[in-house]
Length: 476
Image 1 (tube, rainbow, N blue to C red):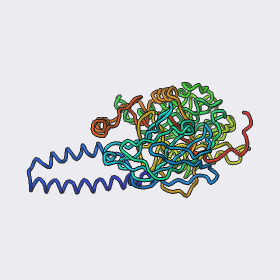
Image 2: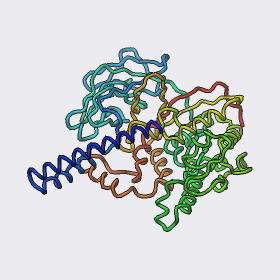
Image 3: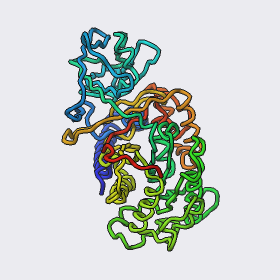
Image 4: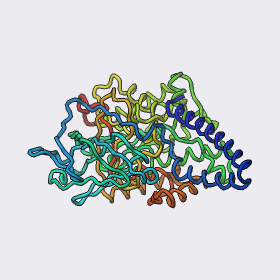
C-alpha cells in the first residue's frame, strides 16, 4: 500500500470515528432536548463539513514546510519593510531565474473559513498564491517572474485572510532555457503530459510525447451509454490512446513524435515485480497492447507479440529514446508524486537509460501529492507556491517556467480535448462546490468542471531538476 493510500485510509478511519461520536451526541441531544434538534444539527454539520472540512489535508496547517536546496544556490539578501520586499543594497537578480521566498504565514480568524492568500503586487505582473485554511508556519512563495519588480524595489506582499512575518529568505536558481532543447515528456496516462508540461513542450525546439498506458479503467461514464464494463473500458482506452496522439498536435508536435505504448492502467507495478510475465487489463479483458498502439508512427519491439510485460516496456522505451535522443526528459517526480503508475514510469525510464552513450537532463513533475489533494491551491491563472514537504533530507532544485495568459488558454483548450476530463463531476462534488462558493468564497471553475482545470492552468509550470545532462545528445 502506498503512503498516499495509508494516509487516506487513516483519514477515513478517523472520519468514521468522528461520525460515530457525533451520532451518539445527537441521540443524547434528541433524548434530552427535542426530537427535531438532532436533525437540524446534522444538516448544519454536513454543510459545515462540505464547506470547510472536505479537503484531503493529511497534515496540520501549523506544520512548517521543510525544504533543503542545493548548497551552491544563490541567496540574495532581502528584508521586509512593512508590505515591501526589498533587496539589500547592491544585490542583483538574473531575470529568468526561479525565485523562491521562505517566510512565515499566519492566518487570521477569517483565514480558517476563507483560503488565505498572499498577493504579489507592484509592476505589471501581479500574482496571488494560496495556502491552507488556518495556516500558521513556514511556507515557500514562488517569486519567479517578479525579478524586475523586486529589483526596482516595488514588490509588495499583502496578506488576505493572513499575515506574513518573520525574516524572509530568498533563493535564486539559475536555469537553462529548456525550451531551446529537444524535450521528451513521459506521460503515464494520456493528459499527464498536458497537465504537467504543455507550456514547456509547446515551446520546445523539438518535442516528443511518450504515453505509457491506455488509461482504460474506471470507465463508468461510458457504461452509462449502455456499454458493459468490458466494452466501456475498451472504448475509453481507445479514446485516450487517440488523445495521447492527437492532442499534442494542438501544440504543434508532429504526429510522428507522439507514441502510445498501450500498457494497462495500474498494472505497471505488477509488471515490474515479474518482468517477463504478462499483466492484462483489470477491466478490459485484454492481454494484448496492440489494440491501443495502432496509431503509432513506427513499429516498436513490443509490437512483435503485444505482451504487456516489463521487459517489453523497457525495450519500447529504449527504442524511442534511441530514435529521439532527447536532451531533456520530463517525467514524474520519484518522491512527490505518489501515483503507482507514475512511480513505475519514472523507474522504467531510468532503467531504459542505463548504458546509453548520453544521459539527458531529467526534470520531475507532480500531478498528484501525498499530503494535499488540492495543491496547487487557489484558482486557475494564479501562481504555484511550492508544495508541502516535510523531509529536508533530499536537496531539491525547483525550475519554473512562466506562462502567458495566451499560453494558459491554449493549455486549457488542450485539457478540454482530453476525454477523461470531459465528464461532469458527480452530483455530490458539484453540490460541495456550490456550498464552498457560497460559504467559503471559492470561485467557480473558469475553463472546465474537472478539478485539473483549476490545478494545472496556472501562470507557472513547476518542475524539479533531478539530474543535469552529462553528455550532450547527438542529433537523431
